[in-house]
Structure formats: C-alpha cells, structure tokens
Image (tube, rainbow, N blue to C red; front, side, top):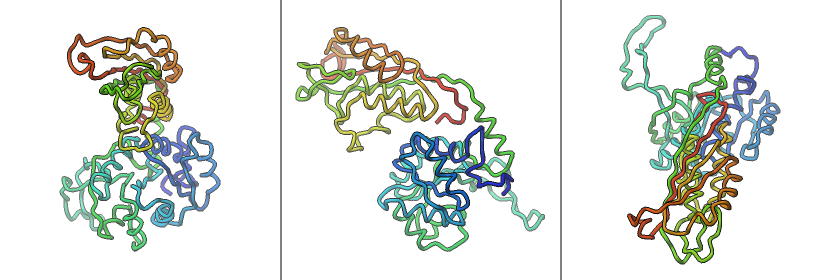
Length: 372
C-alpha cells in the first residue's frame, strides 16, 4: 500500500474522520436514492460502524466486498435495480463535489451511454521502453479519468457478467461489452488519494474556515381559480389559487431555491422537479425544510432570508406576522417578508399570476473543497 497506513485505504483517517466518511458526504449530498458500500474483507465491522454513526445511515447499505475492485463492483451491482442509473465511485476520491454526481447522472439519462468525468492533461506525456523515451504522445487526445462513472444499471450488470480480468475501471468493462462511453468535464477536487503527499494535500484543503455565501431564488405561478391558494406556508380561503405540480407556493419555492443556490446545491427544479411524481401536491414548506437539511449535509447553516412577493392579491401585510413566524421556524433563521405590485405591468400586474424573489445568506465552518 503506497499510503503505508496498514489499513484499507477507505479507513485511513483524514482530519479526524475516515476517508470513507468524507466520501459519503459528497455522495449523499447529491441526488442519489441509495448508496451501496462494499466493505474490505478485512474490516467489514469498521465500515458498518462508520456508516451507522452517520445521520443518513438509512440510505446506505454495506455489503462484503471481494478481493479485487472488479469483484467488489460486481457484488455491489447485484444490489441495484437494472432499470436505474448507477454511479460507481471510489472512496479514495473523498473530496469529490456532490454536483459531479448529479452531472454524471444527468448525462447518462440524456445519452443512455456510459459517462466518465475527465480532466485534460497539463504535462507533456512520453512513452517509455524501460527507461528510454521512445515517443511523445499527443496530450490533446489524452485525458485523466475520474469517478463517479455512470451507466444504465442493467447494461453495466450484463457487462460485468461477461467481463474478463484486468480491467482498471468500469468504463473499460462497459466498453469491452460493446457499450458506448462519453466524457464530461471532471473536477480537480475529485483527485485520487494514492500517496502520503495526497493525504497532506487533503488535510490542507479540509482545514476549517468560516465561509458565508448568498443565493437568489425566483418563482412564478399562474393564477388557477379552481385551486385553493397556499402562500408563505399558509392557506388563504376565498383567494384564487395558483397552478403548479406541487402546491404552487411561490414564496416557499423561492426561499427553497435561494437556499439551494447559496449552498451550491442545484435548484428547485433539479431537486424537486415536475419529473418526480412523488412531489405532486407537495407543500412548499416541505421544500424549505428539505433544502435546509441539504445545507446541513454540506456543513452550512442559514443566517437570514428575505423574500419579496409580487402580485395584486392576496394582501401580504394582513398576515405578515404569521408568515414570518412559520417560515423563520422552518428555516431556523430570521425570514423577512414584503409585498409589492408591478403597477399593472406584466403577468403579475394583470392579475394573471404571482411571483416571489428571495435571497438567502448561509454560513458554515467547512473546508473550501467541501463546498459543492
């Protein structure tokens, strides 16, 4: 083992936590439903203990791994629904940003192919014969491949079932079975820990510092008189409702969007979009609390939120105190709420819809590379 740590690489401690624990932070902050961890044969109990100590342990399944990486991946794939998208990731890349998982997954859905994140090579690349340099390679056609690597699960399962030995990554297994593989830009922070120098680099990147970030969220919904109105987490009897996949609460939606924006965690559509049947009719206040939870997973806490409602009706001022109390409790920080009209201009001015614009301020003591 080049690290010389005497334990499986995933269990090597970094800044007081195992490499596996750091890696799970990035994975579980992404849009993944379930994580399967293959435990080294020599330390299944230690892996289970790391997972069980996490607040999100219910989303993680630990299975015994095999003697090689290829065999371990094949074991984990047996736990995956063949109709899903599967992302295969190495715990030895503990600082991989959560956004990279989401980008790889989206690319698999869009292309139906295998997807790998890659980085361009900065150095000149030579081909050797022993110690003799025999050729200079065209680095413009060469890349360094990272994980997570994404695939249609069923196709990767079939590829592994037919695979020979000697493959060094999942894309090579997939390609050997005839699968197409495409590349997307990788992330410098998703580097692999191989040497003691890599460990020192990670410890420096994880040195805690206080950060403050801002985010903006905007939401607009058209009026639908056939629906009840929910705004700011409150029901408004007698007021025309708003059309939407969920409850169309523009105030809560804008706040959730602003919180996600501040955390670099994507946006409302990506996290809770109309393509997700389970979000139909969902209360907007639930999107707010779930966004706060995603921030907490990224080491961030809301400091304040301000939201401006734009529309002719309802009159926000009559229930402002109720809205402020409800939303402040949901966010866990002060929320200010104001209302205005658009002087008869546009969709809101004609009374055809209601809009909301929110800003959020969040803070946390996290390493720069832990930010998505």
